[in-house]
Image (tube, rainbow, N blue to C red):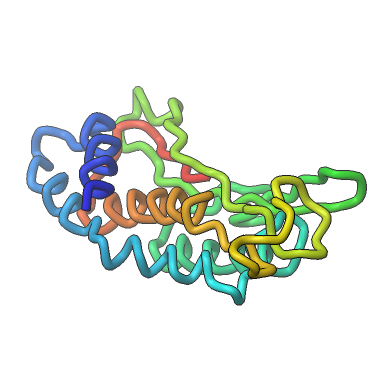
Length: 178
């Protein structure tokens, strides 16, 4: 699988590791596995989340899953409401972003922030008024599960956050996961 190599390309240049922590980066990279990526993708693209349309219950369940994941990793909350930040859109609908961070360890650079993010939502299920739904649904189904758009991106962001924590990589700059 090539995705872990792509994640490595994100993680290594951020370098993040001081010279005395050179063993941390290889350990971090080993934590990014196909199994971990697929576990998140399978959950996020499951029928239980109803295609994660923003402002609908399936999206809220996905947000709670992400909050549980970043709490388990020990990341610091960075939203207005702990790990989340609510935003309004499309008339009267609201949704939440998940924001968590690892503070930078270099006093001169920690005020600088590197953002690693993606979008969580997709187009939901038939009957939810959102853009992007093609007529007829995906192969006769009524849920657009969104494994590629963007459960895979969300899984990648979680895996990079996990790599920092697992490898005990101390970033010089603050890393915001959104």
